[in-house]
Amino acid sequence: MHNISVDGESTGLYVDGFLSNQLLKIKKGVNTKDRDWVLIVDGSEGSGKSVLAMQIGAVLDDNFCLSKITFTASQFRKAVVGAKKGECIIFDEAFRGLSSRSSLSEVNRMMVTLMMEMRQKNLFVIIVMPTFFMLDKYAALFRAKGLFHVYTNKGKRGFWTFFNKSKKKVLYILGKKLYNYSNPKSTFKGRFLEKYTVNEELYRKAKKDSLGKLDKKVEVKDVFQHQRDVLIYLCIKNLGLSRTGLSVLCQNFGVSLDRSTIGKIVKGFGGKKDV
Image 1 (cartoon, rainbow, N blue to C red):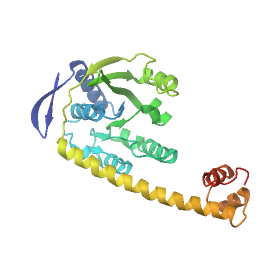
Image 2 (image 1 turned 135 degrees about the vertical axis):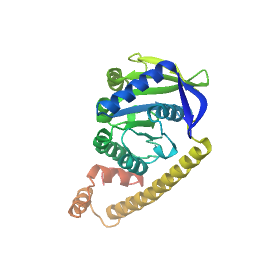
Image 3 (image 1 turned 120 degrees about the horizontal axis):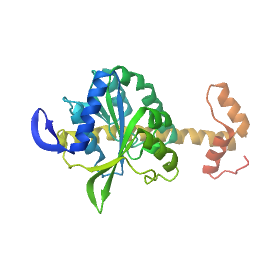
Image 4 (image 1 turned 90 degrees about the horizontal axis):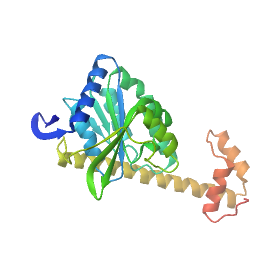
């Protein structure tokens, strides 16, 4: 078993023996063969996935600390770009607070563009999220080396099941439609203790502050979107523009807005479908 330290002091916290041995082999391979290692840890809210990710990070990175845990896309990008060789960076709750498909796509694109940076610096990157089925196909199938799915058993936390790279691919293809983790069978299973490898109080504060700022950005975006929708509705109903005419007008100013989207916006305000 691997003893984890917090701030350089022994905690008496041990990681599952088989898991720690596998992680130490991976650590050696990444550092000696000029590779990187991307791991996904997912699970429902409150399952303990962030705690497991920290414990894995502490085994892979002897200097793992709170500053290497990020909560927003901008924090994650900054941490990866500024990381030293062989460090472990965690993107915690990678998709929390994202309210639209465009937001999901933005984070997915950002993660794909950082893959080269990760490899050049031989980084260990752990992505913590509600479900890996939300992840971009390239990252999920080809870049991530494995998946830890964290779950509760009869109300108790501290359980995980691991899918290696080949089984993870099959799981993504077969399970994505229903978000089902039963097929194929996992590579192996294990337990973990619910203990933090960083200062828990400071971690919770950093997470709360970051997500609070993210929520405010989402609120501002929602206000602007509502204002846009009102203007579109007024152009259709009060100025007599057709959906096609408004779409063409927007394109002339470099804004992509198709007839279908305009129709849905008008319908949302109680307009007729055939406007």
